[in-house]
Length: 340
Image (cartoon, rainbow, N blue to C red; front, side, top):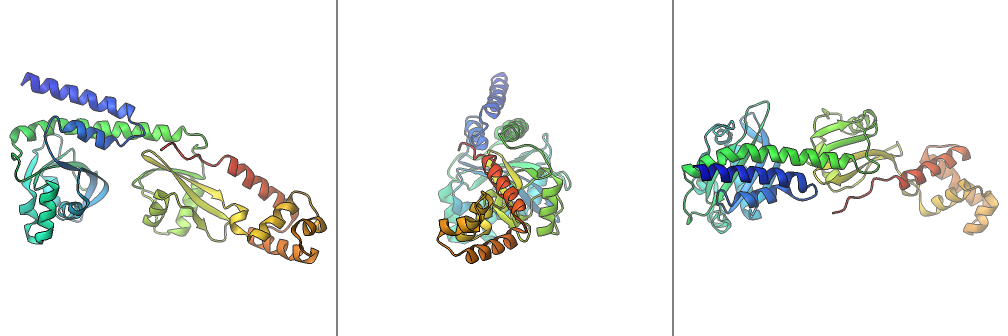
């Protein structure tokens, strides 16, 4: 027993060391790879979520060595059977051993059974840190092949002791990632910034950005990014705000998303010729000089400027100069992409 406790202690210390070092690495993969030395398994699902209305709402899901074809039926099982998760509630609650094939037998065809077999995920050991309707919970599901030795009570006891350390070290890692993200150049709290987890959980949202999000998604409650915005943010795609000359721009930093409300560059709101005329006019050239440079008639230059003013929401040269200067400054201060 003393050797077992010593091994568990060493593993816990290893977890926290990894959490501190692996700021830009997939911590879950590193932790689960180390866990295989404590409890042998072939694949794992590590999830956080909340049981609501008899179903599990998954906020975060990490698959380890899980074949993509076998992932969907297992996730469906977890969502439809929250009582299995509730049975593992609490750091001192019992682990829950199940035969995944038997549980899925009613809803699986021969092909799905074969996917489970190939994925070596026919047997399941489930443990949770906490589970209640309001606070949510975190669960780890380990899987073995039917041909392997089944999970036993020692596996349950060991995982029961280790799970709180896995959960806590994951939280430490996330906190360090967020601190790392918030220390990047150009990322400062403010009315036009937001900091969220990669699953959309909002940690900070400035008033101006919040107002812009609410205008696009009136049902937004401020707790999690709207689904449409989250998808675009995860892809780092800009979200234009029609009629405002602004956009929401996102950058990914390890375990976080940083969103900014910024002006849409003039060159993205104007045609190539409109932008060239406006840029030269803002630089101090008169109608005739711009016309000569661009090979246009002065009247055409005036018409192009009139169109540019309308698209940019301005009405004089002074405003054009300020807009161009702000666009250049924003380009210099744009959030840098992190090293990947």
